[in-house]
Structures are given as C-alpha cells and as structure tokens.
Image (cartoon, rainbow, N blue to C red; front, side, top):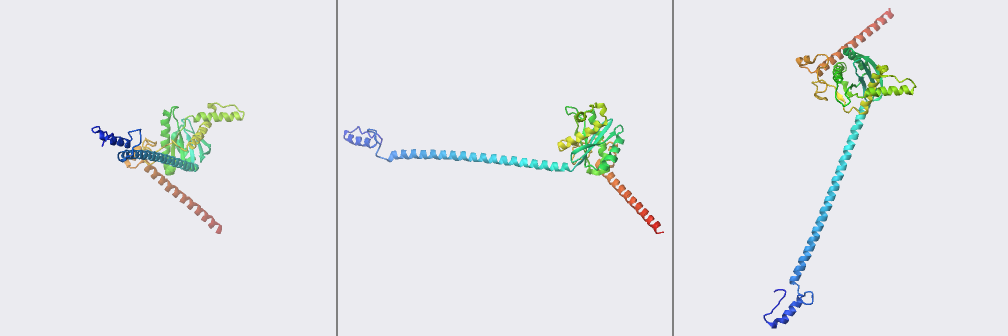
Length: 328
C-alpha cells in the first residue's frame, strides 16, 4: 500500500484515508504509529551506523597495528645499531691489545742515509741507528745482522714516500724495490714470523724538523737548519713513522708480499722480482718465492743448530781436558 494511502475514487473512504495518513505521520508532522516499513528503515540506519563504527574500529586497530609495527622496527634497528657498535668496540679493543704486544722497527729509507727506530707496543719510539744507504745490499745485510736478529722484532714498518696528493713518485718505486729485497732476507733469516709493511710517510721529515727546532728553542740553543741535522733527521722521521702507525693501529698499511703469495696479500702487493735475481729460477724449479725462503730458513736453522752443538762439544772437551790435567 503506498504511504500516502489516498483513495480518491470513493469519498466514503476519506475517513480511512485520514486515519491512515495520521498513522503514517503525514498530518501535523506526527511520528508514525505503524512500524513495519519504518522499522526496516530504522534497522537499516542502525546497521549502517554499526557498520560505520565497525569500520572506524577497524581503522583504529589498523593504525594501532602500524604504530606497533613501526615501534618494533625502530626498536629492532636500534638494537642492531647497538650490537654493531658493540662489535666494533670489541674489535677495536682486540686490535689495541694485539698492537700492545708488538715490537716494531721503523725504517726511513733514503738514497743517502737510512734512519732506523724501534718501539715496543708503540710506547715512545726511540732512534736506533743511522746507516749509509749507498750500497743497498750492504745496507740490508747490516739491518739483518745488527738490528733484526739481535732485536727480534715482530714486524718492520718502512716509510713509503708519496706526493702531497697521495700519488706515487719515482722514490716510491725505489722504496718498494728495497722493501721486497729486505723481505727476502728477513724471511730467509727469521721465517714468516716477521712481517714487512709500508706506511705513508708524507710530512714526517717536516714534522721531525719542527720537533728538533722546538727542542732547540726550549733549550735556548740555535735552531739548526735542515743541512745541519743530517742523520738525526732520518732517525726522528723513523720514530714519527712508528708513532703514526701505532696511532692508526696499522689501518691502511700495505703489507709487502711476494708476487706468488696469496694468503694475506693482494696479488699486486710486493709484485716484481725479489731483489736478488732469483725470480726466474723460482719458476724453473717449480718453487714459489715463499717456499724458497722457507727452505733457506730451515737450512739456516739446521746450520745454526749444528754450530751450537759443535760449540757445546768444544766446551765439553775443553772442560774434560782441564779436569784431566788437574787429576794428573
């Protein structure tokens, strides 16, 4: 039945029309008394409101979930960052502990003179020697016999001369050749226990001049010129090389290796001949440079052991001879 319920065909139904319109709220804006169709609309509106509330609740739950997820991600990132920092601190501490046990020799190699310094654990490097460098073979022999073997270092740090912009110079190539030749002799005399490294020595000479000048001023003496310093400058430069090396804990140091060595070295580190002309011979015999050094080192150890036993036998025979003379 239409909501207007107008029965205009028969006037007898006017009263019915009136009552029906009144029941449906069409007169005087009254609320309808019948409820079947209006209750459906009311129920639909209520359901729509409930659905709207449900949607708002879902949105609120989703926002809370996103907030919780974001907080969890932030917490995870913070935890990972803290763990990374802790790991870096542990590695730094281990590196410091390892460097505190090193005994290092610093070499400021030059074409005229070579300054040598020594330190244990990086504590107050001191000048050790100033050697003439005109003859490289004699220089290396002197370093091995008079410094390396008596002092028994764990590593050798050689200053690498570079240009101010960090590029290599002609002197850099000469120093690398010297380092490879020294590596050969060190490995033959001391084995793999002593490593050879190269360290950027830019501005070390200027810093050495500044230190010596400052000390002279503090004592009230004349400030010496660079020509007056001579070998003292090279020895102080070797000390500064060691100071910088320990200050940076050897980061960016270049380890000198043979060209056929792989473990612990890059392929181009220490490349070229070993300085004694045996590069081709190593290829012919099928032995690498490291293996040749190890063989020579073992041979030297055996020779030293034989010499030690011979000296002991001589001392024992001399003691027995004296005891025999005393009995007679």
